[in-house]
Image (tube, rainbow, N blue to C red):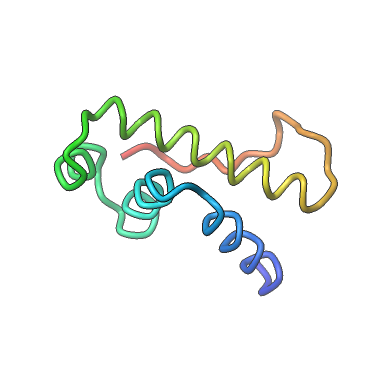
Length: 82
């Protein structure tokens, strides 16, 4: 990923509401399991899963709108579930 793309991703993540951003970062950057995240944030594991799905969708949509690309099922920011 080039520097420009990295900045876009960082901006998209930074624009997320705090509760989505913290969940996404704990999972993707800190590589914590859903269970660990649930314990740290004192929320149900289902809420962790929901927040991650919504955060990933918001980042994907932000990146798509920044590039002017139409939404596509092929574009995926899928990251393996822990």
